[in-house]
Length: 248
Image (tube, rainbow, N blue to C red; front, side, top):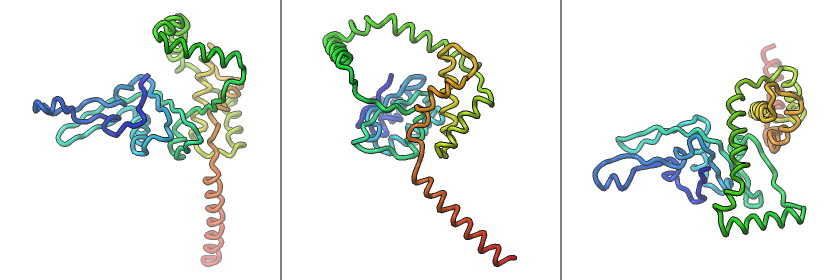
């Protein structure tokens, strides 16, 4: 897990000139946070407060799986194949639509309502603050089991199939919600495939779509786009009417 500090600058994220090496007249580049996160998880806390240029770089690197750094006469290409996870408080501001669209699954986190669970949460935090290694060791068996299950699921994921019949349910659901972005289908179907293999099955079922749809389709509708398209339809009708009158 690689965490992006809130005050990170572009140089921190992509890397730059290694100043120590430059002192000894050996110009070379140092790796940035994106390169360190290759084949890992990049966690961005308060993602809605990160500078736009930094977010743009992260999204481009995540989409391509690599990025190029050029500083004067030297350049380097780094792999950046990571899973992007972000958290935010809506009270502190929203994300730009193009950034929001890049996050596949969205989860609304609510506070614990059960007093016993809240007390247990406090006890675990307190224990971790006193002795982090001891707490981690207590969950070592569960962590190892989860790691093995996830790795097995990743190995078998390419074998999971999605039939046209099952995909039809997802397509009809997305249409009924009025979602325009194609990322809705991509995210929903890929999440359903992952859900199926996590359950030990090689074929996606309706239950997989049912379980993943709230995560994949939440916050994907855009009132602006809907109004924009309606306006364009009206303009198109006016243009076609005017063309018909003039040329017919």
